[in-house]
Length: 313
Length: 322
Image: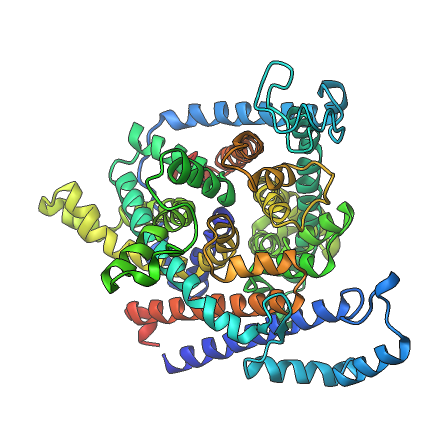
């Protein structure tokens, strides 16, 4: 599930095959002027929501009415629908669903953010090296990348985790992170190639600035913006991905509450205990939506080309 | 053109080999082998060594790898201990069901995606365009398995319009006429196919809209406008034809997410395809079946994107000439 990043690939492919002029015209149709004012609003709202989510995750022990794994009353409170004492109901082990959701935010958010941090770092490094060295090294590195990109990520993750499960949380983060950097490095490499051609980079080179210094002072700052945008959208993807893996029973380990594992608990008897499956899903949607809106709004705000032609989605 | 086709076919073969290699090393690097049980299940070391020798686990890694690749090439993917059948046979049985679900979903998602994208481009900048953009982003943010379960809950149980999971009516299907059987499968297909389609339609619509907006400022559109062609005709006849071409590439690119999505959707709807079988195999730690479905899934994706690229080359006269 990754259209927003994937979608750019055909355009790149076209550009590479020299047909770009026919498809990506420089002129962009006039869009409504109101958008320029609208984008920052979406940006701030989504950012505020993300900050709120992080605070909730951080202070989950203070906010949660119960302990997430405490079995309150395995007979009397088994699968109770939402009530005043338990606003989101209880699950089949009589655990309070609200508390589990609050603690689940910690796992879901930290897994997604750390995994994306890892893949953004690895991807940036790989893209910088390939783009800077160029020539044959670049060609080999890019072929390798193409091969990695063509393996469906979900299948790779399923195979990996199914054979190795149960994996500790750190390993889960590492596995998701190390299978997610391919797109980023392609993005970075393209950016490096374009920056190296710009006048200031050429001027720096002409003045005898060492190559690594050019990369550090001129290339990296230019690369970080698109990487940050891609990472924001990546967090949204990984939250869904982690939830899906937990739903297959190969993500976060059993008693640990993550949004995906809570959903997994509720999916068996969902006809009668719908609240266990409904609420973690709503939590995922709101979070993912916030990250997606933030990412696209950020891209539009930072990239004047996108501003005219694109949209806030 | 011939060189392009040859290069693409070669590239696909390499990818399939790569998928096989990765699967092999995943199995070999995973802790233990089928005979290493702990506790009371532990085997007598002599018996274990004999079994390891019998099944080739004591041979050098390179030899095992060559054997593995040779077996995969001949369709021997091992034995599924949870289904008591050869993995190859299981996949031959379930793959057509997944392909049926996927192709219907793919078709639906392109129809929906292209239509919505064209509508947005036609009404660009209006409230309709913005609203559809927001709706698409919302759809894009929904986890596939969650939407599937909620659709099943709402339309399979609360308001039982559609059958609640499965591919056929377990009891009555065998007694139906041919037409009845087709209607039965179609009724079971509606919910999973629409769920799967809606999620990938979001990406396609966005891409279609942007592709159309790229085409609209071009000279031939201006010419058409100067001739007095209506805006609707310009978008639907002049621009859409040119903007459809890059969308073909999306066909191949949306396959990985469709195959991945099928994993979850099939599990939710108990659609007895590859994803459903794989999910069950994971639960029963049936490693051969898991890797078998992963390899088969990888091959489906690779073939699909190869097909999309060839289709693209055939449809684009500029590429055809090379």
